[in-house]
Image (cartoon, rainbow, N blue to C red):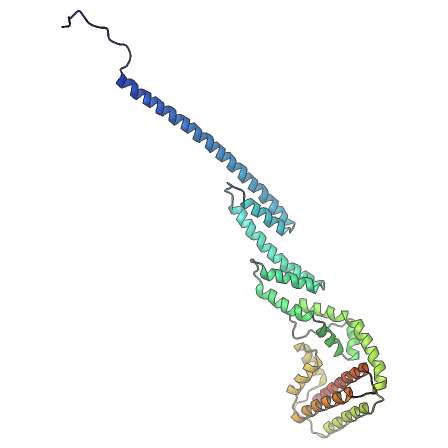
Length: 334
């Protein structure tokens, strides 16, 4: 039995059922604080790294803008791609926008450089630049570039330039040497290619003048052949036959026909001959007769043994000139 005076003293402090929960709360609070501190430090590190990355992007963006101002398109595009590759950067929109602009300007610069090359008579370089432009993803003026390539390729052809000079008579050639503008061929519709082709034709002027000097020497021997006399007799005969025929109802002058050819851009004698045959109102057998006689004369010229090869070629060319002139005269008097 416990006596009422036999009491033990009470313990001071909290009991275990209060202490343990309190310790748990304090431990959790400490954990939360440490975790918050760690997250805070990590966030500061992340923000610092983000700031560094975006600053690097901004630096490269400024460099690329300066490169674009100096038309250094390849370097600018490389710099912008480097900016996009920076890990952790978020400022991508300005970079993407400037990259698109740089590629568009790079493409346009190719076309502009090609046009300048044409103006400077640098045909092969211009054609290479145009090919690069056509392959560029940001090229927009594709039809314009294809048209320029097509006409430039024609204008760069040596046979075309030589043919224009060969079909000029001496008076026309003299005026061209003195600076008269070349009538543009119908194949060329762009001022750029027309100017380029005129420059190409002028480059072959010295060769053409030498060729004509040689031809003049050859003609001395050509005129002494019986066949040359036959050609002249044929020309006289055809003109006499023409004078006996009544004039057509609609007269066409040589000047008007030449104006028509100039407007159509027809400089080749063979093409002019075809158009004359289509336009004139005359006995269709006349054109056939001239064509057949042309072939016969040329065949006989190539069989001449008293002339060398150069003289025979000069004779063939002379026959073309004489018969073309005859066809023009028959046309103008109908």
